[in-house]
Length: 266
Image (cartoon, rainbow, N blue to C red):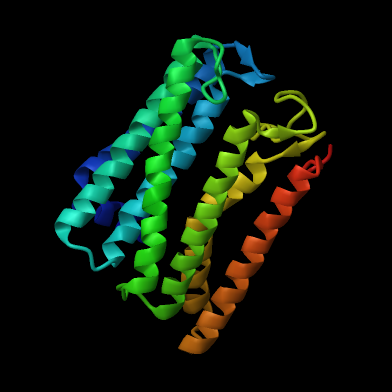
């Protein structure tokens, strides 16, 4: 809890605007939960507010993560401000579109039922494209620069960015086929809340685990180094093994989905 409080404090001090947008995502998530309770409209087999709820939580966590990690890079204040603002405002627009489409009871992603819906979907693609470019920038800068952290955590952050980049590429695969399921149309039987298909392949699984690699792998590196207090080389080796296993797991879920097999068949 103390470490989480430190992260929030660091992000708030580093970029008040980014921190405010993280808070907005949290408040929007609460609104979505209220919507689930009072609005019984169904879209693609689930309540219309479940999808924006997931994006509010996931997006808020990602923005907060980036806002904290950027403080570890020896960037100039101007460069940090540019990156923080680009990420904050583009993902704010993204979630606003998702919330707006949910309020209308229509799909936000893959929706080309009208010119207006198609333009909103195209705008979302551009906004995400900007963030993918920033992810690539972080990959390059993590290799090039010396971060203000221990070596094992630096390697974990690099692996995290690589995994996130792959997760974003999976998102591009879904955009390319205008659906996330493989073998059947979107919708139908799915896991509670997550709604991942339980009868066919679903690319959202690899996409989800990929996007959250930037939290999971560095957190593991920090936990291991503090829990076991090993030497630097051991910490790096264990972190690399964990990161590669995590990446292999994501690759497996991707190919599993491409072959039309569900992540969990219920």
